[in-house]
Image (tube, rainbow, N blue to C red; front, side, top):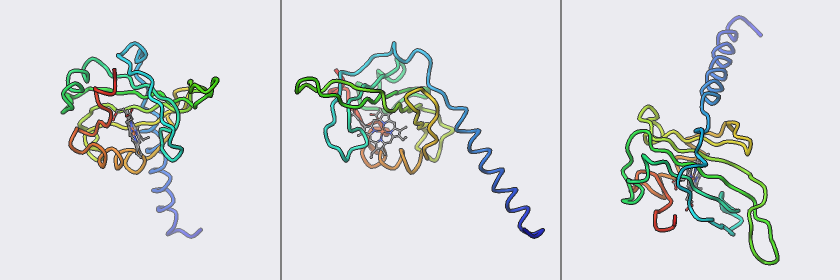
Length: 157
Ligand code: HEC
């Protein structure tokens, strides 16, 4: 390594550390399990990101807007808990928890339409997915006209 490359390496290291710090600061909202919960949603298309069984939790701030299809007030939150599918005598039932995702309306997140997107492991640790490439682009395509929220209240109950 010569002298010239050192500042570049330092800058790269710094970028990595600050990104990791940003990812580490996101945490799952405490008590989301007490929010209004959707009925069980079963997705049997193996190509889908949501292949499995999931439940969507909606907080009180988001609920009013959810019934109208958006737009959402600052602070609105959605959490999805994803499970594998277990076959119980031909009936699909939730298996192991496989993933948790969060959307929180926060105007600081300009690159992702004013929502914070975050993915978590089943234990609730940030999984470090890229919120633009791994989340926002699909949500924009599916629900650009509903403030990026894809699920509908009519499917919720
Ligand atoms: C390939 C498309 C796609 C990608 C990528 C994607 N999602 Fe979604 N997301 C969906 C669909 C479809 C639903 C609605 C599922 C339903 O109808 O219950 C959804 C629902 C959600 C919800 C519940 C609120 C809503 O919009 O209905 C949250 C929260 C969420 N996703 C977060 C994320 C996060 C965080 C990421 C990135 C780690 C992500 N999603 C990546 C397609 C996607």
